[in-house]
Length: 55
Image (cartoon, rainbow, N blue to C red; front, side, top):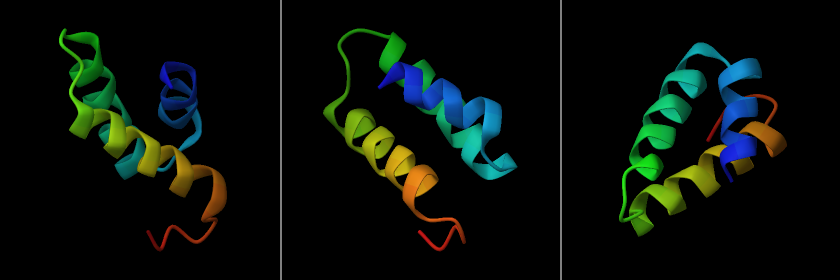
């Protein structure tokens, strides 16, 4: 998941980049938040599968 979030930071739009940075910070601090993991999954899914950024 971390690798995908870093990809969003590098290649996503500005809002996605900011959100990905925040999620990387949240996931770096133990214990990992299940909410942060779910948000990371949703963000990566939107980045990979929603070219018009409607999600």
